[in-house]
Image (cartoon, rainbow, N blue to C red; front, side, top):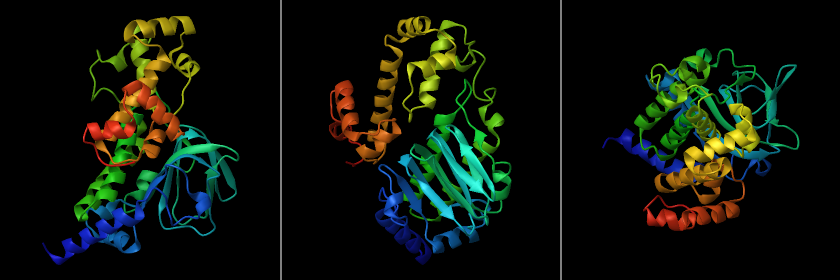
Length: 334
């Protein structure tokens, strides 16, 4: 093993122990949020990214996820060298560029340009859940083009929101658990895909390349099976939110009686009971395959209270989250 590889590995071990701690200690305490996760790369690693022939095209300097962040507010009177992506999946917020103020709603994103003073945060008195990335590189300007205003990423029959969120988790994990330059390169490649999924939304959502005309998403919504599949897809795309029966009715265009009857006929459960079980199933997967703590997983399934989450999980699965993780030999985490 050469000296450079040893240096990389020493850095990434340090990164795992110090930077990723569930709280971003580089921010003041008033900016810390329950369940938040972030990775902040030190300047010398950013320099290493900028000099790598592959990574230099597009690379992450900071990345994080703030669930249900109340009073989140950031002011930068002097512009920074990175572009800043904010993707709001729940709640609402705002941002200011120059003399313009923009409102940001659920399922919208924006990208702040580098070198420009700015301000952003959750709407006063409300919470928002955001994925955020600071990035640089030769391709950064192209992928940020047109995103200075809020752009929609709303759930639809052909949306892949949950898949995009999985790409984000891959980037976060690559930087958290990385051991060498190859992990930085992998994160860079993922960032290209992640930003492209937003910048080229129509192409990303095109189902022609991935699904046949007989696939569930392509079924006409006025057919009973298609309605149920559409509703389940909507649930999957909103796993981090607390959606209501009315949200499902609005999405499918059906009345309460029609929809609930169809849904229970096809699944054996009421819509909201099915959604709860879907959330617990997703929590099981996270308990088995990640080392996320229980108080982080609860936010990933749209439940803010970790004690309430544990009670619901135990009722549905017959085991507490911690006991389930141990029974499956999953990653450690409390």
